[in-house]
Image (cartoon, rainbow over all chains, first blue to last red; front, side, top):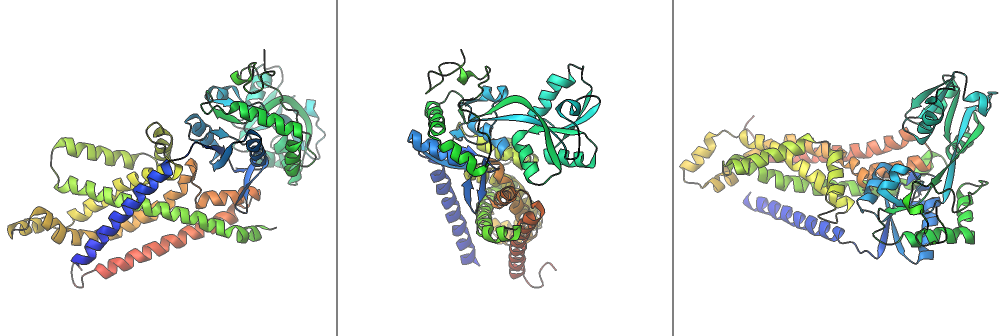
Length: 286
Length: 222
């Protein structure tokens, strides 16, 4: 009994030693390789198939890293954890379908926009509503709660009060679209990339019209660019756009889509879009 | 490619995720065991000074009282100023400290279930306190602790599935990959994942019950 117990004890001590050294070696990371945070359950921007990272953001980021001559490694996290991780400098940059917003620009620094989304009015396939009649006259409009679409509708249509609509908030756009199919709401307002996916997935909907808001998507680095890599990323994005590699990557994932020009719409509220932009001194808002 | 083909193709990655979960589980249980036993020993047989006892009570209350998901965020983001900690390291620490608080209570009640007279009797025949704990109390308390400890094992294997929120690619995260890359199949994929967790859980508990049986002294305490 005595011997068994002491062997148990030494096994425990060995295991704890192994744990200690394991933690220490995990903690020592070399800074020559940049860690790129991604949300890899977000196709077509980033996802995993057969154990490999795929998607527009993945392929483009690898090309940009080649262009900038830096080494990168991807680090996957759920989307709500990514911006805090970048703000806490747990990751060096963020590459995913990331929308540029004023609040986010206070916590992180954005590269030049590489994509642009617009909102569309989606109605049932057999509906004869158009973009004007769908969003007026007592109709009920579905949005995802907390989304930029909800904010836009409240600011531009609900709060001014001269157009009579009612908002229905859902926790996901998929439920909103299904509810529209049952007939509880007349239209759904959603970004164009998602709408295209619903149509391709065979849902009985069509696009009645587009609301041209030009929401930019971009890469991001920690606030203040502590790694001094923002300039390289900006140059890399523009370089792969001008060489045509960007267009090939995007069309590989979304055939037939019209590719927005780079740099696209750069909102005034983003401080890294003030002229001169890091790495691209000829560009920027005056 | 239907979902069953995808599951078959990606099954090795699910197993890889399960492997990460199991390593995490082993480390957190060992850490929880060592710290939990130490806390319990100090609480029961250490100095009665409140400078030692109160911090231990506070530690145990805090780690048992805060949701694990918040602990994970605190250890991952909150410690970045002190230590360049990885996702996996933060998950081991958050889950391990928490487990130590729970395990200290398991050991606490196991030691208290040994009649108090035994310590007095051991001291009366001239054994030191350490000797009495080691040879008289511990063998009995260990037997009592195994039953409640199976609970701790079962809940911790499931808690590891939360580590993905700070970027540990374990079994649940691997399942998310399959769900999103195939645009659906939530129930099918999670059914397979649930089955994997269940198998590990059953295997672990069976081993613990077998161990309990092996340690049982025939005719004693029945």
